[in-house]
Image (cartoon, rainbow, N blue to C red; front, side):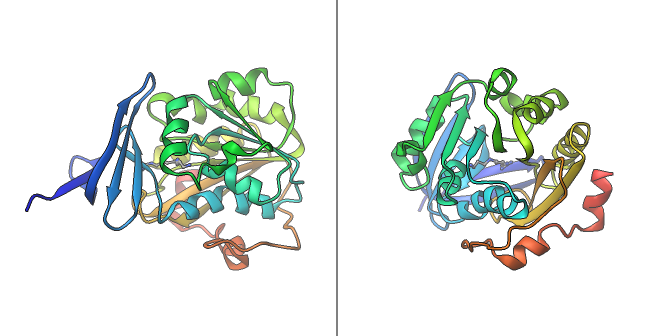
Length: 271
Ligand code: AG3
């Protein structure tokens, strides 16, 4: 019997492979290549330029950790949020669940949105809410020119190669700073500390040049390189946890306290 596999290459000598039942889609857009697979163990799998973006069975970890953790770590109000990237809608949907009144999602590639709406109706549900505004535009340009001020800005990008490179730059973080309300918070995914130290370095040094508080935290995401993933927060105020916390499927009070505990090798990358 023929077996079909999708592999994400981490290096010439290492890859993670999913046995697949079927390939549902493969499109080349103006920005990137999008592929969609039906896997055996993780449900549907969405990849961009050969890198895993989300699977049905573990997406909740990433989406809870990029939204709930910063939200409950600071006293920001659930008023207005901006998501840069995140065209699958998972981040926006999670913000709506937290009660945000207004979520603006700026995604550069409309085809990521279309694919998610068709194949991940639950994850992309934000896009059919009147509390969410979807804008197809370059996120860098958008934050540069927006006159709006946000309580939280979330950068839900691909790796810092190709279209997302500019989303790890100092000038982008400084535009974000200007688009935040006083005491507002930004967060970005900052890669696998083990396999992508460059992503973490870029994020932490760039954010440090603009914000007085830079906080990296980690989560276990089985389908991303090494399974050990990082996120980095920028703010001008120190952490001040909310008293009442909601639980997710991954996120809870223990995770809120423990996620900021970093192994020594991670601290070294950041310093
Ligand atoms: N965006 C971050 C995915 C980065 C994964 N990198 C990799 N597999 N090499 C996730 C999009 C979910 N909204």
